Image (cartoon, rainbow, N blue to C red; front, side, top):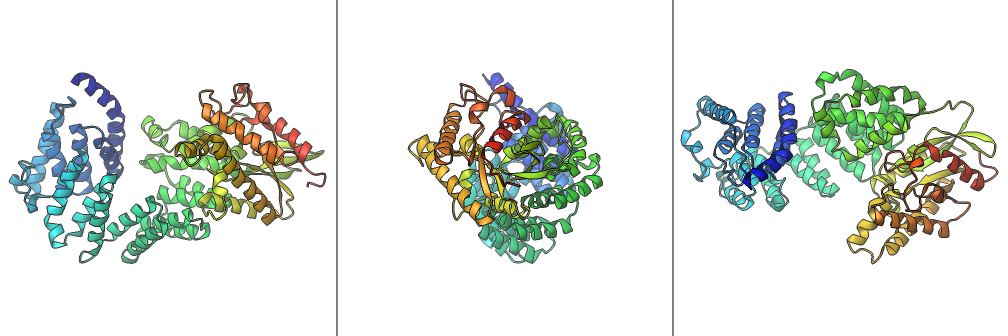
Length: 565
């Protein structure tokens, strides 16, 4: 039984160890450490502790490294059978002895973890208890430690607070530890930043802004805090201020992939694709592949592909080289970026969509705008003829837009992004096509029913569609544009019965509430008797391919007004 369990755990653990080892070999000890901590939270393996020790040693924190090496050598793994190989055990012993000798630590402190007097309680000891799931003991050790009773040593509280943040059950104590660090004599800007992160992750953006501000006040060059301030403004829908703050962060660290990614994406939200792509291209030109050592480095090409496609024909020649670059990612990097589900999904979708011609020549054609979620890209840059006039489909993308986001009073990021799309329409635009609702049917409607917010799928659809219809009317009136609505494309997997039902009911609601000439209804054309997308129109398992364009053109000519430009 132990052997079977060990084999199972090793299968799950090996990819994480490989990712961490690669990061460590590239001197990215922070990323390697985060991977190890995640692994330690679910699997008891002394190899993880050994690697954590090496991370801390590279980081310049010998006390934490000592605790990890000691844990690697003393860990009881009888329940899993995941023992430290002899060569690794010897390496841990050698590293432990070398650190004890180099730093003059008292050997008694490291001879056993049962010694719990105040002076032997270290952040590493507490962190090991957390990693082993012994959170009560970790809390007791922290409260009994000398820095707590004396309200001193901010670095101690910072390290403990960061470790406790990873366990939801210890969130209150993490907040207490980080606040204590800030209030120690001399303060602790990094602890203020951690508090900002805690509030940001909880959606408490005003509180997060307060703590990020404290960090910047104490440490004006703290780029991560500036980026945190920008993130808060972005998620509050204040995109102009977000861009200002992202620019400040990137001035401090111009080649940091995270800041380049965030600022480029903020430019996307305000429809300034040229600014986004100038920044992204400059970064790519200055960052050789040999310096791509973190997940964030490998994430930037994914966004770059989407921006190039949505940015228009000027940027389309860059797409294929980017696709080739991503295809050549090392396997470990490829596995890591696949965890960035939204960005990987866009890359996968576009890599399949552009196998045919990306965009035929647009000269002599006026744009017809598609505004909405990722489904606007299915038809982007394609030719259509509207009442005898040559046109092309110009996308105005709102990543992640749900109909439910558009409810009155909501200031979510996608709402601000939607308004920026409308503001960017050329003067004189009379009609446009709005595309939304698929994400609601995929996850929003059924999720709300499962949480008992509604008694039935029909009730959830009725409420969501009501929000959608009111928003369409308000947007049309505010920007003086007649909006046509594209029917929601169906799922591709017949196993998704709930999604099929939600999509069918939503399209039925649009037919009864809108009908012609507002609704561009191609649902019956692209849907099989099973309620799923016909294979001829399937691009990537979620979006339609270019084959739906003749159907869209049919509906456009049937429903657009005679005077449409």
